[in-house]
Amino acid sequence: MKRRADQQPGFVLHSYPYRETSLIVEAFTRRFGRIALLARGARRPRSAMRGVLLSFQPLRLGWSGGELANLVSAEWAAALQPLAGLALMCGFYLNELILRLVPREDPHEGLFDVYAESLARLSVGAPHAAVLRSFERRLLAELGYAPLLERDAASRPIDPARLYVYEPDRGPAPANGAASGELAVSGRTLLDMAKDDYTRPETRDEARALMRALIGERLHGQSLYTRAVLLELNGL
Amino acid sequence: MDKSGVPTARGLDRLLEALRVLPGVGPRSAQRMAYHLLQHDRAGAEQLAGALAAALAGVRRCARCNNFTEDEICPLCRSPRRDASLLCVVETPADLATVEQTQSFSGMYFVLMGRLSPLDGVGPRDVGLDRLLERATDGVVQEVILATNFTNEGEATAHYIAEMLRARNVKASRIARGVPLGGELEFVDIGTISQAMIDRRTL
Image (tube, rainbow over all chains, first blue to last red; front, side, top):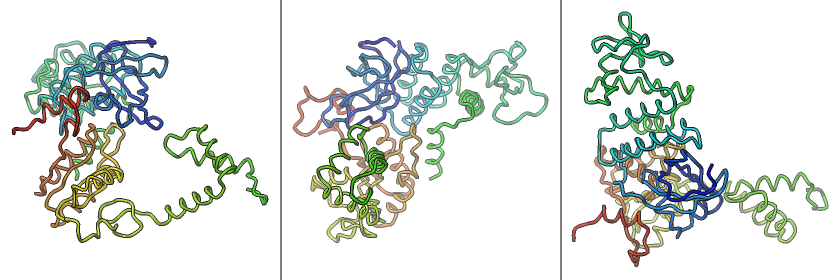
């Protein structure tokens, strides 16, 4: 990693207490990807960084040093309306996806921009499903697993009237007769997803199940904390 | 220890290892503490060992507010002078102590002993939300004041408690945030001012 950087657009994904008064910040930066930074003294009562090092806020970060660089500066870059309620949970979910799936120090400028835009949309109350599905699709594409949505596994155009079964490594294959389960998806849904159009309830349901399965493949069977916590909350 | 009171190397190692469970204590601090206790302050060490054992055996969670206490129900929850219709929810015993210091709140408390933290897998049951709901819907509590921290995790915690209380027709309120008392705008961090603008109120 570059030893010194200044005024880098970035977000805090998560932070952990370190020693008595410091924080380890997992940041997602535009030019350097996901990096860990040590924010010395950031947990002191009068630390100027306290009100700044918050998730979901566009920041400009400066750091210096090697493997675990010291955070030197953190500035407010723009004011987003803070996420609240379910939008806040969606924000945690996006952060967990990045933390779990994007390797450290691997720049993904396109994904960074989509992430920033997703947060901005969540903060003004955009429909959550549309924001999450288009982010997930872009994330998979950045990792080299772009879902095939406009053509089937044999490169034929998707027929909106047909039912498909999505094979994670190959793409959608026309279903013979009745298919069910999270990998069963209508041609119409695949084409809607290709256009990021989630106005149809059926598209939302099928797309959520499909993306969940495809992301599950990338997580190699590990489950996501945010999903488990949300399920538990809904059960109370 | 052997009979003469000199620590065997193994005893010292175990002490060093044990001290490192404390937050912020690494190998070097642990070594300094261990040598201090064994060399210079053996009476203090005795006292520490006794206090630790007694606390572990005697201190438990209050059945009503979840704070640490030696009784089934803590003195604060038993006090007839407190207003049982107000319930203030805080994250930690330290937060409770801070609100108490203000002497501006005369209601009861519920200590979560944490906060929802989805990224760390800390869910509602880990912070006793089920017990809080039971407490808040006992018919005596009229208003629940959410005094969790103004972090994203604290906000998520407050939001979900509020939602659950709304579904059960219990009034929920959130403590206000903004520029600190005596604060001069010039010296207040930008995030706080930005939030204060959003949360402004009509006069």
